[in-house]
Amino acid sequence: MASIDIENVSKIYPGSTARSVADIALNIKDGEFIVLVGPSGCGKSTLLRMVAGLEDISEGEIRIGTRRVNEVEPAHRDIAMVFQNYALYPHMSVRDNMAYGLKNRAVPRPEIEARVAEAARMLELGPYLDRKPRALSGGQRQRVAMGRAIVRQPAAFLFDEPLSNLDAKLRVSMRTEIRRLQKRLGTTSIYVTHDQLEAMTLADRLVVLNAGRIEQIGTPLEIYHRPASTFVASFIGAPAMNLLDAEIAGNRLRIGDEVLDTPVSGAAGKVTLGIRAEDLMPADRGLSFTPDDIEDLGAQRLVHGFVAGQPLTLVISPATRVEDCRRLAPKPGALHVFDTLSGARLDLHTEHDSRPVLPVGQGL
Ligand SMILES: Nc1ncnc2c1ncn2[C@@H]1O[C@H](COP(=O)(O)OP(=O)(O)OP(=O)(O)O)[C@@H](O)[C@H]1O
View 1 (tube, rainbow, N blue to C red):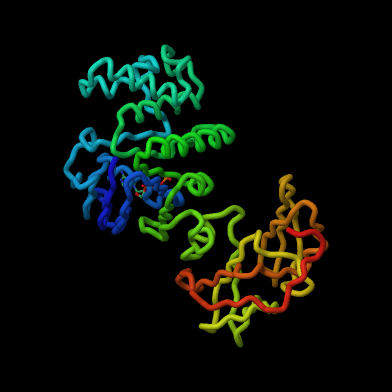
View 2: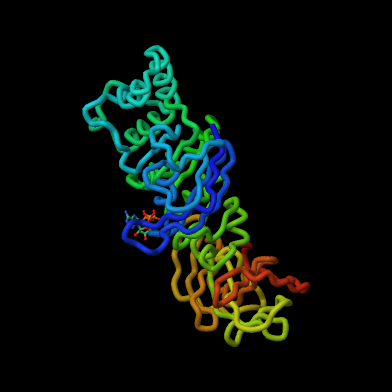
C-alpha cells in the first residue's frame, strides 16, 4: 500500500499542441479511494494511464510511495489494473487467470495457491475456478478480473470504468462489492467513471475533471453541497441542479419578474442561481411555478415546469399534490450563486428569510 502523488502533470499527445491533461496536482493518501469523474474526453483515462505507465508523462512527476515512477515500466510500478473489458486470457481457467501474474513473478506455488483461494473466497468464485472465462457471466468475469488484481497484493488498484459492460442491477451490486473489498483490503485506489452516481457512492474523495483540468476535489457530500462551479453543479447530482439566469438587485435575487425573499449581500448584477430539485418546497408565497410534465418514479415524483419562463425540475413525495406546488420557496441555505460568465461559485452571504415559509399539503 502506498500514497500516490501527482505533481503538476500534463499530457500532450504526439501530433497535438493542446494539453489533454493540464497541470494536475493531486495527493492521494495511503488507503484512499479516489474517483476521477467527468464527461467523455475530459482526460480521466489519460490521467489513470499515466499513473499506470501506459502513457508517457509529458510534464510533471508521479510518485507511488516515495518512488518517482515517470521512467518505471508498468510491470514494475506495483499497481494492478482492472479494465472494462476484463482482459482475461480466454484459453486459461479462472484459477490460472488469477494465478498468472504471480507465476510470472516466480512467487512460490503454495503461496500462489493460498492467495488464489483467499481471493476466490472473498469474491465467491470458488465454484468457478476450473471454468474458462467464456463459461462465465459478465459479472463473474468482472470478479475474476478483480481477483487477479487482489492476488497481486499491489500498492494500488487502478480501475478504468470496470462496470461499464454490466447491466444496471449488476452494476449496483458490484459497486457495493468493490467498495467493501477496497475498505477491507485498505488498498489505495483510483477509479475512473463517467457515472456520477457510481462516483458518489464509491469515493472517499471525488476529483471532477473538465477539459483536462481539475474542476473540484472533495468528499462526495462536500461537492454535492458546495459545488465550485456550474459545471460541477450540473454534473454531480440527479436530477441535475436547476440553474437559472438571475439578477441581484437591492439585496434580493430576481428571476425574471419573480423575486426571492432571501436577502443576499455581497454583489450586484447578473448571476446564475442554482437550486437542487429537492431543495424547493411548496409555500404560500415564493416563486411562481408552472408545472408542465410529471415523472412518477415510485418513491418520488419529478415535476418539470417553468419559473419565469426558465425550465425547473422539482422533486416531491408521491403524496404531495402538484397543484400545491404553484408557489415554491427554497429550503434554508439551499441557494447556490455562481458567476454567470466564469461559472465559478460566488460566496455571497445568503440569509434565509426569518419569516417562516409554510409548507402546503404533505411535507416533501
Ligand atoms: N492516443 C491519443 N492521441 C491523441 N489524443 C488522444 C489520445 N487518447 C486520448 N486523446 C485525447 O485526449 C483527451 C482525453 O481523452 P481521455 O480518453 O483521457 O478522456 P476520458 O475522460 O477518459 O474520456 P472517455 O470517458 O470517453 O473515455 C480527448 O480529447 C482525447 O481525444
